[in-house]
Every structure is written in structure tokens, then in C-alpha cells.
Length: 145
Image 1 (cartoon, rainbow, N blue to C red):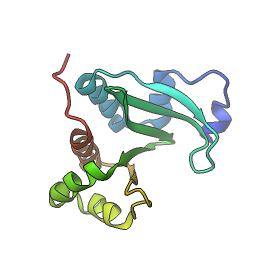
Image 2: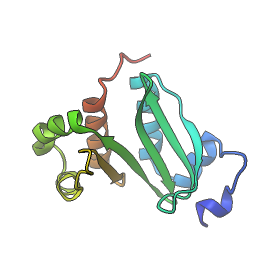
Image 3: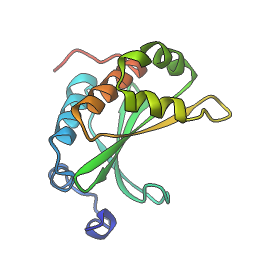
């Protein structure tokens, strides 16, 4: 069933409901990693954007956006906004990332201000590790709790 139909609002879904809907251990692993590595808690927000209408989960660290998770049935997308500073670091790290992530980076054209919006479909451990690597370039992880 469609995410919007199940959770139309105004109450956001709980963390348990999100995990049950996404139904992949990759979701739980990333949520746990974000909590431990960045000492951040999820914030559910309702988006009316036509690309990702419905509830999404935002993470912030040090007062800045870290990533946004878009839940799907059995899968999810992690959006990482890569500014100019991050772009050069990603370019250097690119050969160590999966071929799919390398292709996504090359196909995602920067906007006029040099920012890229990377939408990574996290469907494998390999992509999950790419997400962690990109987040670490964006903001160095804290020590674990």
C-alpha cells in the first residue's frame, strides 16, 4: 500500500512504523548509525513536494542538514545535498565508491550554484556504505555514544 495512504497525517509515523513499512535491515542500520555517529535524532516532516510527497525523515548535525530519508515499501532513498566544498572531496573519493554511486554522481549535474542533490536508493550494503562515506565527507562523525 502507498505510504501516503497509510500515513496521510497529521500525526507522523513512529520509528517502529517506519521500520516496519521500509522492512529492510538497511534502514535500521542507517538510522542506528546516524544516531551513534552524529548524535542526532530523526525529525519526521511532511513534504508536499511532488517528487517525494508524504512523510520523510530528516537528520541534522551541527545545525546543518545531513541527509533526508524517503521511506518506500521494502526500500528507501537517502538524499544528500552536496555543496561545492563537498564536491571536491567526493571527486577524490569517487574511485572507492560503488559503480552505481559513481554513475549517479557523474549523471547528477550541479545546479547553477554548484550544488548536487544525490538521491541514493539504498538497496544493498554496498550503497549503505557509500552513504556513510559521503556523510563522513560532509561532516566528520562524532565519537560513538
